[in-house]
Length: 232
Ligand SMILES: [Zn+2]
Figure 1 (cartoon, rainbow, N blue to C red):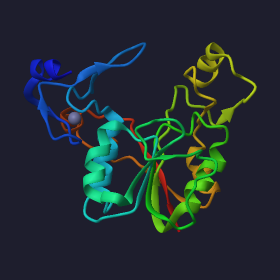
Figure 2 (tube, protein in one colour; figure 1 turned 60 degrees about the vertical axis):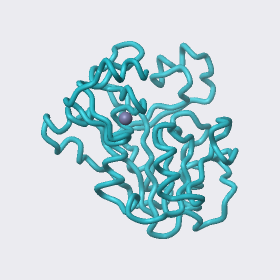
Figure 3 (tube, rainbow, N blue to C red; figure 1 turned 30 degrees about the vertical axis):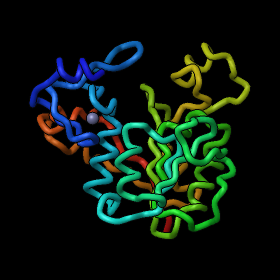
Figure 4 (spheres, rainbow, N blue to C red; figure 1 turned 45 degrees about the vertical axis):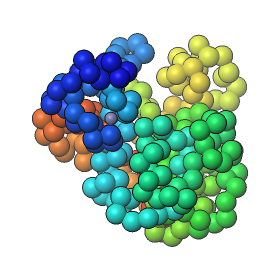
């Protein structure tokens, strides 16, 4: 990737996560690669850059030291988040050796009101029970704290979220839920699901409201919505 970073040297785009500029981002995607998607330096994708900008522009994440639980931590974020929050930045995962705490999201090993922020992106489509997981996230947040809870959506997005634990065949999962390791497909009711465990849901469309030029310069997807919730 370092060689590619050299090849892509330029000023056309800037990655807010690592601060580096390039001619453009790399294409990325399994079946139909998306143009201008992957940062050749820190490997951030569109959604990581959108989350970063959201945290920077709309929350105190980078202006205060906060107690943060980062579930299934994305590697591109870890160094900067640790620099910002020190020992109060806790990474957790069910298997990743990168994470400080090994945990099952259905039973988070922390007391209630423990964290200011929980980050849990592209996790809830894989877990046995997304509502129990969200309830647990809500429990460990302090009142006034927030969670970022991005999940993938596949077109056509169904009205109602559906899953079926009986479907275990990878090819059948891919067909029904969009990917071979997903156990549910999220629908337009996702904010209602977030609200159903007690959150005030976040559904922020700031990326859609940016100009085309701005989106291109940060390598963002117009349909990227920041989902999450605030604990009242
Ligand atoms: Zn980057």
